[in-house]
Amino acid sequence: MKTRIQELRKDQKVTQMELAESVGVTRQTIISLENGRYKASLVLAHKIAQFFGVTIEDIFIFDQEEENL
Image (cartoon, rainbow, N blue to C red; front, side):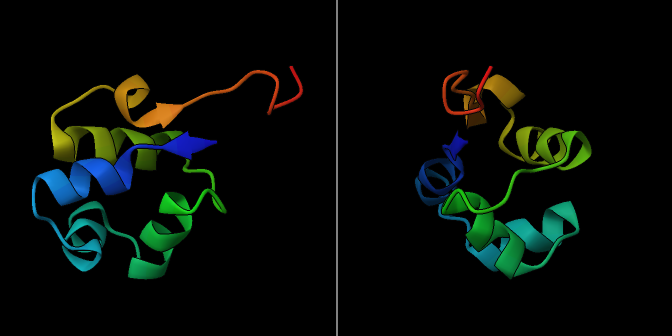
């Protein structure tokens, strides 16, 4: 799954650590999300969306073929 986390974070001049602390995860989790190695839980996705003031769909790009649906 692709995300726009890094793009939104850089646009708002937020560090990975600042985002991680705001949503209650480690910086490594943010790195893994940005690199597509980790899929956020619904709760985490919601927290990240709230942090940036956008919808979950604005951050997480869901590809049905990639997810084998």
